[in-house]
Length: 138
Image 1 (cartoon, rainbow, N blue to C red):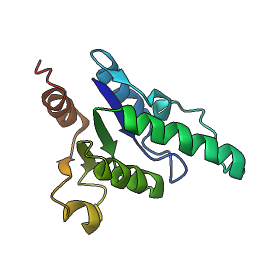
Image 2 (cartoon, rainbow, N blue to C red):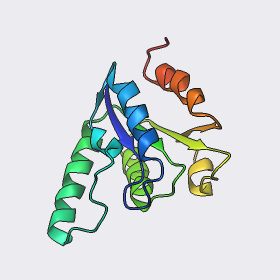
Image 3 (cartoon, rainbow, N blue to C red):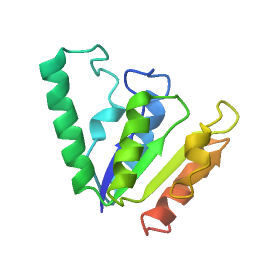
């Protein structure tokens, strides 16, 4: 399965280590198109209109190629919100994880029946849900 993993980059990198662990878990069985989201050395600054346009083109191409979007949305991100809407408009299944002890999701996400919302309080709760989503009950 081709997975588009969405997580905050310019909105904040407080969960970058979590992203890396989730991506590593999914990569054991599936293709994560956006594995760079888990890297700690990402350039967080705007890179100019031309470079940012290339990022947009690449990310939307990956979205169109993906079978599912898995988003970790504890740290709010305008980009992740856009990716979710883009995926929804193309009928790509979207699963949103967030730590309910640290954040609340926007009503634009929780009120939309298209999105599958998965609150958690401990990271270990995520992995069995991911495995079910990806069809790899372990």
